[in-house]
Image (cartoon, rainbow, N blue to C red):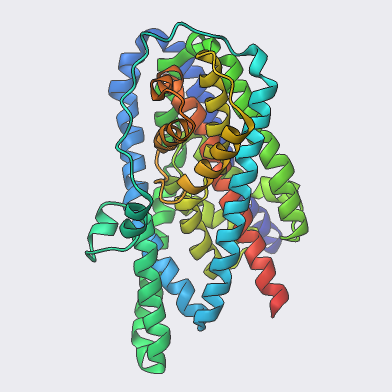
Length: 410
């Protein structure tokens, strides 16, 4: 009798986190709508608890990325195998990001007639400092052992982990003590992650409630068409591109994939942080069958360079801003947007609001006024929730596909 209860109990535990996050999501929306007149209270006294939770998640992300990638690289025992995984991952990420940008432009052009021409003389927006391509390359490589972790520079943490992992492989048997140490520390940080993730429902409520209270239905309604265009793009990319790639290249049912990803999807939607969702994303993909060594390499890399949702946002917002200024983009300008958005995704931090930096780069590349960002800045968080959700789902699809590829290769 007890043997029958245990699997049911395990199933309830597995589903409970997604259900708790979903309930917290609904409660946050209801509470936020009810508190629109008291948005200052929500920001001052509810949001800090969400910030505390997100700080805890960010605290554990650096060590997890460092030790999980080192552990994954060491477990592969072959540098050529790492190169194979890395090659597939980067090609997949760049291809899906380019497709996402095209989808965003197509959807936005279909909605073009609904976008208004506005009085734009009063718009102001201070563009972030531009980063040259060479600076991006230089900044990938760390100059200090601790700085990448303390500054949450994920690309530098990944480079550190790869270099140390390669060194351990090259040393061979005499590095067995280091291998055991890396694996034990990886287990410890994973356990800390589990403890923090138990607070997810509280964190989701505290993060989302103030956003709804501040924005409300009125502000969202004023930009309803551009928001609708972006979210249609997000859904289309997820349903068509990810379903197709997961089914054909990953050997997994799309329904099973999205069902298994639900806890990470709900958390990403609420927190709008790819890096913050990373621990939960790793847990979900491993339960879906992705190998630990693959997910520990592919997902941290994806949280840094894979920006499918952000790419759709670039396309939609570029057309919207051009429309507001009465500017019609040419085909060559749209091609330039695709290339710029795809390349700009490398090195963009997986934190809330990073898409605004990319948008400034995209607008500048085709000569659109950067001041136009002010048109969407007020509801950027609402865009961000959807694009982050798509970003982490794309990371997970890659982990499934690479894991399946390696299984077939054996």
